[in-house]
Amino acid sequence: DAKTTQPTSMDCAEGRAANLPCNHSTISGNEYVYWYRQIHSQGPQYIIHGLKNNETNEMASLIITEDRKSSTLILPHATLRDTAVYYCIVRVAVDSNYQLIWGAGTKLIIKP
Amino acid sequence: ETGVTQSPTHLIKTRGQQVTLRCSSQSGHNTVSWYQQALGQGPQFIFQYYREEENGRGNFPPRFSGLQFPNYSSELNVNALELDDSALYLCASSRRQGNTEAFFGQGTRLTVV
Image (cartoon, rainbow over all chains, first blue to last red; front, side, top):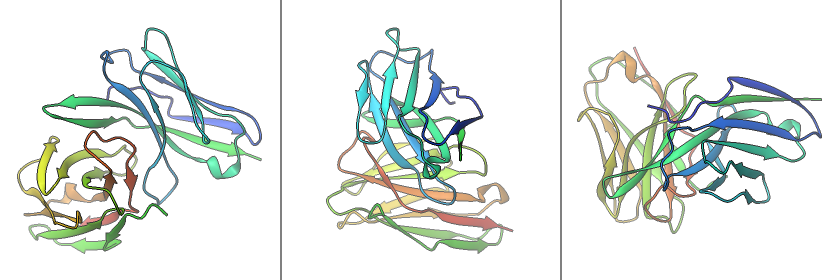
């Protein structure tokens, strides 16, 4: 079962920041939050991940609340090519390994 | 381009048949994971292979099996195909266990009729 809940869809104007929320209220202390996106007809693409602290890379920023029950992915200057389904994922430990538990994702549409 | 290639890209099979899907992982990656993605849903973890051994499995029946070869490429085999097996099958490779930053292939679209 998915451990995350996300809005089904969102719109954002081109050039503006896109803020994608995610709830993961049952996350455990050692479980990471990952974000991937999937552009139509392609395989998912890794964006960013984090545990407690906020993270930033060349693609996006990840803001995790202090209680770790929710997070926000920020695309600072959205372009039309950022239109995709964005998945917020929790990495859980299973036996001696880890699994990514995916939800249904948010369909983000960037409008000109 | 992620360096992960899957074949074939599309496949149509009849219920009850068997199918083999293939994946070549990115150079330097020793871990391969397989996912099933039904239309409109997120990917569901099938299993992971690390150094040629199954190393983690999701909630899929034994008729879903796999192999990893010494060059770290991998196969997913599905026996006794059912209509509900129709989906996009994704392969992802990573440098090590833990499903850290994984690189996905384009997937194989399987249709069971």
